[in-house]
Image (cartoon, rainbow, N blue to C red; front, side, top):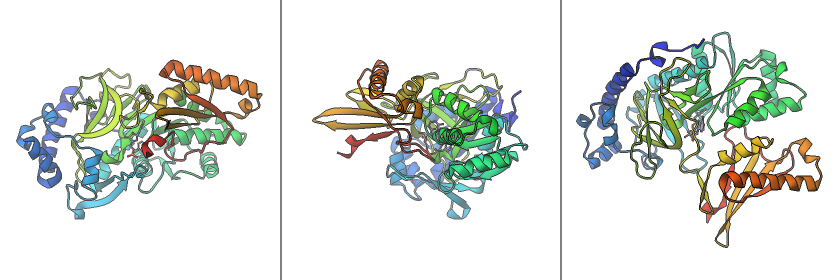
Length: 434
Ligand code: DLL
């Protein structure tokens, strides 16, 4: 039996949802036009005024916003409320040098936490649960978002933050955590550590995990479910639109329901910007319908996915997005072929390897080099050199079958690839530095 945090919204008829979205969009465009000179300028340039936007059917008339706009307008240029109304910022790690700072009014925080509460209830969370939040706290949205949602649901909340894995496992055992929230790569690491400590899933009480913030495959889902003895659910979000909880998975585990009363989703062709029909694969674009302080209209996420309105057995009518299949800016083009790290991960797990790998791409004498370091388990490591070489050749073949190009595969020692407590680094593309 499915549980809902807000049944009226989550199971609303399509007709009523469209009406709500239309009303909210009209008000939001007016709010942005009047309060954000940066976006007004973009609208003026495109010759569109708030009067042209009468419903979500008119959304395509509005200009896109991109990460470059966020950089141009940094730090306050997209703020739509006076500072006196803002109570918090959150920010991305800025590892690519493109730090995003998002602003929140108290109402924005309430709505965000509400979205996270929907995600927790969808995995079976109630006030009987002990919810261990091991996403990073601080500027990253993962910790604060799920923490807020967990409070709303009334779970006993463990604000662990990431890292200190032994302590995570100790709290998990001592307090009987039933729900865990962290990145999938950290979940796998916790599972590995548990095994090393000589413990099994029977020694812990976890029943559900809410994992997101980075791409992960169905194979990795099954791996984590086995390691931790739980059901693993996906959660999606980005700092620009609030954080985790933009979309969340239900018991069906076949994609994430978008909280479309707050976030209107479109799929566009990343090359032309043209809006694509439902069911097409393309770049996800979000319009915040309710955000007050930092309301982005038609924000290009760069995430590639598919939207679907197929009926879901959980009873929710919220539109569903597939797992992001990569990012239009993360896709590597190696020797002319499009390569997503997730394709490689699927092969590795399929061949019995843990998802601990690092892809290295470089360009030598105008030719792309393509190396994949894959970690062996202790058992695999005890094989003879000949056996290990045979396994490397098998992996090369399997990857070539999927991608059409030959990588160099290096099977490396157990524990030699750095573990991540937050988002995992899977690719080093040295070509970008040239
Ligand atoms: O990662 C927010 C978040 C925190 C989501 C905790 C889920 C759980 P950013 O750091 O701004 O925000 O990164 C956003 O991460 O555009 C995607 O490329 C990627 N991403 C987020 N969730 C998923 C997911 C947070 N479930 C960027 N699957 C997004 C694949 C994801 N990629």
